[in-house]
Amino acid sequence: MSKLLKKSLWVFHLNTGSCNACDIEILDVLTPYHDAERFGVKLVTSPRHADVILLTGPITIEALPKVVNAIEAAPRPRVVIALGSCGVGGGIWHDTYSTIGGVRGLQKILEERGVVVDAFYYVPGCPIRPEALLYAVAVFKGLVPKKVKSEIKHAE
Amino acid sequence: MSEKLKPAKLLVIASKAGRVTKRYPYDEPLLSPDFRGKITIDENLCIGCGACVNACPPNALQLMKDKDTVVLRYFVGRCIFCWRCVDVCPVGAIKGLREFELATNDISDLYVHVVHKKAKCEKCEGEGATQRMLYYVVQKSPIVEEYLNECPDCRRKSFIDSVVKRRTGGVSE
Image 1 (spheres, helix red, strand yellow):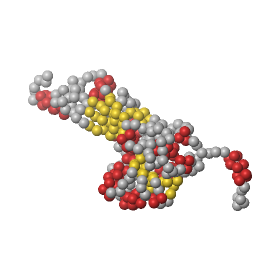
Image 2 (image 1 turned 60 degrees about the vertical axis):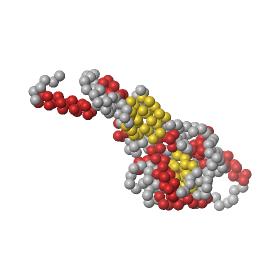
Image 3 (image 1 turned 120 degrees about the vertical axis):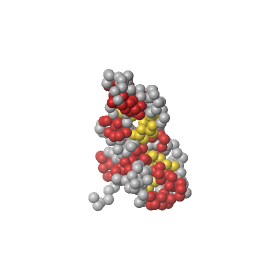
Image 4 (image 1 turned 120 degrees about the horizontal axis):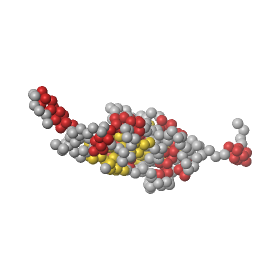
């Protein structure tokens, strides 16, 4: 699917105010049961070593400057994968006063600051199943086909 | 456990333990029967009443009103898969699926739109409910009211007119 993600992905796990459910599922992906290292996925401790930033949570205003700093610190080509309902669309907190409502609000802010992100990917779920994240990695590497499609239905 | 195991011994232990890793993307996922995934809206049953929109906690389902259409929009990226909409739908148009493989590179893949036609008011051609909803009401209550084809404003107007006529002793038609 993407040329950026062909090699092993080293991911940095960035919690931006989520409830920790998605974070627990990320750790579950790295256990021997669903072994994400089959696809070369490895968790790193600094964004400077990372290819991919796994972003969970609706991005609270308190966390926003740190999130921008972390994304800026990742070397290019940098990819952001928004995880969970909160990361993709803001979830339950999409219109509250203390969050910017998911990754789409972040995209505008990054453009204003001049931080280039080469690709955004989206993995919905509340919380994401470990299989959903494995499937996402496989889709982004082009191993399995994409399943979701936008639909416009007409009620006659 | 502190003693160092030789490779041959390790192999024996490993072969006894077997392999736990699931070959998931090429294999069946581990889903329990009560797992809740994304929903699907049947456009042949939906009447566009908006009961699901009221019930949806994160506003993943939204009604967008245009001049002559009502659009029910479902954004999977915000859905928390609580299936409240499935419970409240009066016609059973919403069904829950066990689908969770929703990864995408394009956010527009996550939208589902159901487009309804608006019923037109006979008098002023103003706004009203969807056509499907009027049919639903007529089906539920066999008495067909004469103001069914009017918009809420015209109904209110005609009701006030009839009350005024009665008060002043005029003959209502």
